[in-house]
Image 1 (cartoon, rainbow over the protein chains, first blue to last red):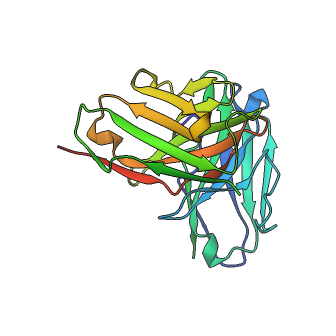
Image 2 (image 1 turned 135 degrees about the horizontal axis):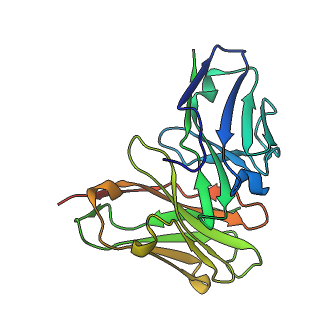
Length: 111
Length: 120
């Protein structure tokens, strides 16, 4: 059981908008630690697509955006494309763990 | 450009010690705020953080694996080593090392991953 909770799966049709939630608690997201998001395609290394809650690394399309409020964070993907089909993970820091925590991952299916 | 590469055995027997090496370039582990972490993914399961070592030798471990893990660095060789004792079949996974900066906390560069199978 992960410290950060994500829905196991989400889906959407091409062109649609989807959101993936990441729910934590007072020892991680609620403690003002940043949330980061990774896209993981089979057979490849994960890549960060959102860091520090809302920042997008160069090369990541602006269709990807992040937000954070209270003890939760969200990743939004607009204009869904087939190439977005992947697993998505949120990550933060936790004071009880005294280290890194990941969410359980969300599988995005593009219908 | 930052690159990292994991190396180690592909097959380990139960109860043995697994030793993985992360060899990196493009940054130094003597630079302020820089760290290297280890993350694994068992087949069909989620990413799991294992350990992290910072430039100042601060070391953090996953509480569930803390008694079995040791992370060390050799900054002169640009290497970080992770040792896991008493491995079980459940430790079968792809193991990744990744670069981080303490200021942001995200893993911004990852190695390609190394698949390790624990089996007799």
